[in-house]
Image (cartoon, rainbow, N blue to C red; front, side):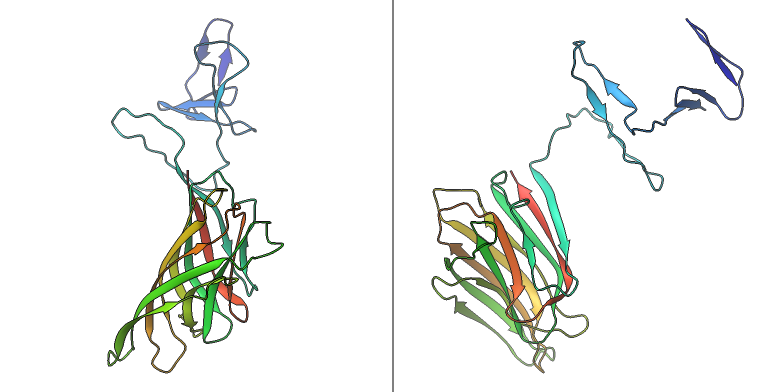
Length: 254
């Protein structure tokens, strides 16, 4: 039990500690509890209308943030996670202009367990400059890939060339829909908001093919989007059929 006086706080120690206006002090530990989740507000050197507030999300389990034994300055990271989309038997995965913006000099798409609804599917990327109203035929690219059969009896490498002025670029080939198959990988898109130059992109990944040999494909792709307008929408889809499962995480580099 505690009582608050004008100039001092006097306490009678109890096992429950001392609580003053949402601040509980017990065994040298101060616990803050507020309805707004922002118990720490710093005015700074100047008393004005601007403060720095620490906002705390209501935890669902005990969490710990550890500060190292060193001097450091906290600041905004230039590499940030923007959005993740998980497929559930969807026709495509599309990142709209809400996420594809000129705020980032490079966008990085990370693919996890992308699986087609049917066998033998190529996976494609489409770029738009009008937030998906159209996907213009400005693609050009090439792919180098190596492969090996599941029995190790066949292995090879090859190069394929995309169609000039196509409406899409192919990232992976002949993807299997069998249990445990699909593909994972990473694609980088350079400076999508540039309105002076054409855009470059690169992809690498791995997938299992649909045929009896169950080949392991490891493609390394690259290409351009021959359009000087800003890209503000990126769509991923298989050549035919839905995306059964998998997710794509979008990261941005400022």
